[in-house]
Image (cartoon, rainbow, N blue to C red; front, side, top):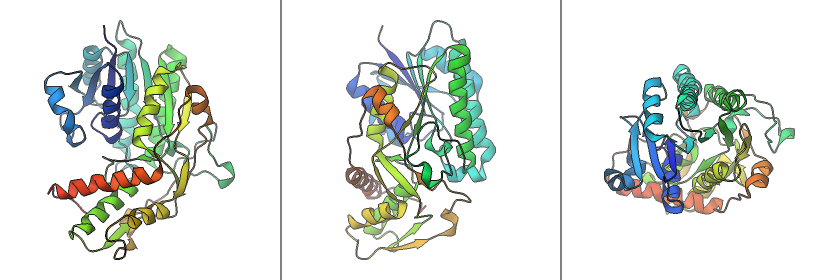
Length: 338
């Protein structure tokens, strides 16, 4: 029997890159959980393989529907689970806090229960928390290690604390092989346009094509972030579940290059064909009511356990992100200027 992996949230940026990695580097059968209405743009290149059931199969499921999760687990009977599905936009969580809490906390609990009650399986389960759980961290506590206290700065962050604790609880109480990650800022091609670096790259690509005036609209540019590439992130997730996974453990994962959001934007503008024309303008609607403005990780624990190291430099990540949006703009798609 071949190894089987279940990826929740396979249509997202991370899920789509993870399935790319697994198809290239393993012989696993991959089941991707998605909602019937999920956009398929990020996995469009895999649809012909899915149609032929060539190592990839999509199963409809929803974190807010327990019966659908039971069906997903019974059909896939996975050896590995990568739980990536979530309401993942911090800004959206301020206007939709209840949906965020339900999807992320109760949705994780529903999935873990479905996995626990399915007979004949004992998968290694990756529960994806977030660096946002640390929230408002004093500068003297940088870099942030795993034992830093939680101080959430959004309903999304609160929901990820629940996700984090639910995963660890299931490992301790029921003996499920759950490991938890707090991934710090990670980006690259296919990043959703509601995130800062991606909306900047999108706006720049639209400016280059004359679709909008040469002004990049921004939110808070002072937040300090440590940047990593999504392709390094999914390699980390693979190593997380395959390199001596320890149930109940929790790890910070992130890059090595840190700069403010403003400096990241300056770099994107510097590689634009219109760099001498572009201006920057803050827009109040892009500001969060509260922001986690110091996000610099200590990743010693994860690196020591797995040997993982990030390989893709910041400059390539940003160039690839900008080129991705250039391709989207050139495709003729109609795009919102968000």
